[in-house]
Amino acid sequence: MSASQQIISETLRTRFSQPNGSQREFERRARVIPSGMPTSALRRGRGPLATLMRRHVLHPVFQPIACLSDGSVYAHEALIRSAPSTALYSPDALLAAAENEGLNFEFETQCVSVALNQWGAIAGAGRLFVIISANVLVQKFKCCVRDSLVILVNGFGVLPRHLVLEITEHERVADMDELASVVEVIRSTGVALALDDFGDGRSSLRLWSQLKPEVVKIDKYFTKELSQHGDKLKTIQALQQIAAIFHTELIAEGIETEEDLRVLRDMGITYGQGYFLGRPALEPDSEVMKQAKSVLLDRRVAVFPELSRASVTGYLSRLSVVEAPAVGPSTTNDQIAAIFLSNPRLHALAVVVGSAPIGLINRANFMNEYSRMYYREVWGRKSGFLHANTQPRLIERNHNVDELIGILTSDDQRYLTDGFIVTENGRYVGLGTGDQLVRSVTETRINAARHANPLTFLPGNIPISHHIDRLLQSGVDFVACYADLNNFKPFNDQYGYWRGDEMIRLVAKLAVAHCDPLADFVGHVGGDDFILLYQSADWQQQCQNIVSKFARAAVELFDPPARLVGGIHAEDRHGVARFFPVTTLSIGAVRIHSGDYVNAEQVASVAARAKHDAKTSGEGLVVRQKSDYSLQP
Image (cartoon, rainbow, N blue to C red; front, side, top):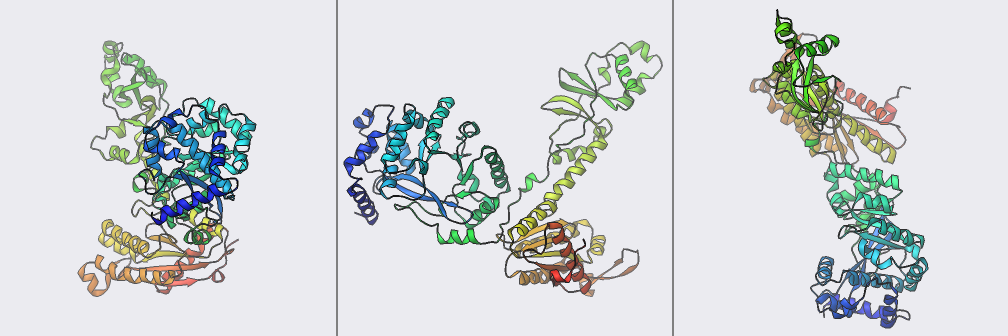
C-alpha cells in the first residue's frame, strides 16, 4: 500500500471510529437524505463506480476559498475523490463513470453525504461549499419540507447557515421555475446558494437572475492569465456590475499565479480559489499558502492589462446621420425634384425597397439633368431611378474605423461627394456626408488614442490617469517619471516621419524593458512624451539605464555624416539655421508619498515640471520631491 493510500485509509478509519461517525451511523445519516428516486440502480450496478460507492470508498478533500482583501480563509469547497490506486480517482473520471453507469443521482447523493459527514466529524470551521447539479437538486429536495432539510443538515453536525450548495449545470435545466421554487425552500432554512463556473458555456445569466444566488463563482477561463488579457479584465468588470445589481458576492476560480491574484485583488473581487492559494487536502487549511498571503498583503498596486491591439481602433458609435426621406424605384423625376426643392440642404436621396437601400441619387447631378430644356415635359412623369448610383456605399452605425478609412483613401471619390447611406441591421436610417465621415473618423481616432497610442500601442492618457488615481487611493509610495526627447523636432524634420516614428518606438521599447510588468506602468502621452510610474525599488537605476541605452541606440538613426560631427544643421522654431546635437532623452522624476497629492492631474503637473528641469539642466535624469514645487490653488 502506498503512502497516500495509507493516509486515506487512516483518515477513513478515524472518521468511522468516532462516537457519532461509525459506519452504521454514517449509513443511517445518508439514508435520511430524500432520494426522489429508487436506489435499485446502485444495488444492481456492476460498474467500477457502483462498486466503489457500495464500499463507501468515496471521500472528500477540502480546498480553501480565501478573502482577497486580507488572505484569511473564508470557506472550503468539498471535492470528492476515490482511492488513488483506482482509475476513478480524478473528478472528471468519477463524473464520466456516473454518466456511463446511469448513477448521476446516486453518485451526487453520496458525494453530499460524505462531504457533510466528514465536515461534521472534524467540526470544520467556516462555511462549506458542496457541489450539486441543478437537476439533482430538484430531484433531491422537491419533496423536502423546510424542517426535514434542517434535520438533515443538523444530523451531520453542520449548521444550515454554514452550508452553501454550489449549483452546477451539467445539462440544461428542464424546469427553471421548479428549480426556483426548490431554491426558495432551501434558502428559507439558512442554507446559501452558489452558482458554479459562471461563463463556462453552460451557466446562464437567466439562472443568476432568477435564483439570485448569494455567491457566483467566475469560471477559471476568465482568471487564467488575466494579467495579460485586457478583454478578460473587462469581462470580469462587467460581471462585477451584474453582481452589484443582484447583491451577489463573486469568487474567482482557478487562481494559479501571483500576477493574476494581484490583479483580482485590486479589481475588488471579494473571494478567490485556486492552487496558488491552497490545494485540496484531507484536512482543511486554516491559512492560505505563504506566497499567496505575501501577495495579498503587499500594498503595491497591480498593473492592469489593456485591451489588445485589434480593439484599439474603435467603432463609430456616434456616426452623424442626416434624417432624410427615401424614395422608391418607381418615384418619378417630378416627385424627386419636388423633394429636393423643398429640402434645399438635402445632398442626396436614398432609393429603397421596403427598408433595404438599393441606390443613391446625387442632388447636383439630378438637378443638372432635370433643368435641361424639355426634360420635364419628356421625362418628368417617368421613374427617376435612372439617375441613381446602384452601388452606393452602405455604412452600419457601428462600423469599424479601419474599414471606413478605405472609403477616404479609395480611388472612387463618389463616396465623398455623394455621401453614403447609413443602415442599422441592414435597414435604412438616413444619409451621411463625406465631411461628416472625415470628422467622425478623426474624432474616433483621437478618442481611441486616449486609451492606447496607435504608434506604440502603449496605454494613453485615460489609462495613465486611472492608474495614477489607483496608486493615490492605495496610499502606496511611488515615483512618477516624465520622459521627453531633446532635439527631436529637427531630427524629425530632417529625416521624415518614418525615422521619427522609429525613434519614438525606441523610447517605448526601452521603457517597457526597464519596468517590472507586475509593479511598474508605462504610458505614452503622445508624440515623444512618456509617463513611467514606478513601484520598484530600483527605479533610479532603471531610468539611468533607459537614458544611457537610448543615447547609444539613437545615434544609429542618424546618417553617417551626422554621427561623425555629433548632430545636424537645421532650422529652429524661429526659422534660424543652427547646429543641433544628436537626440537624447531626459527624464524628470518626482517621489510621491502617501497624502502628497489627491488626483492624477496634480501628479502629472509636477512630473511635467520635473521633466522641464531635466531638459533645461542637460542632465539625463533629474529627481525632485514635493517640497521642490508648490501646486497652484
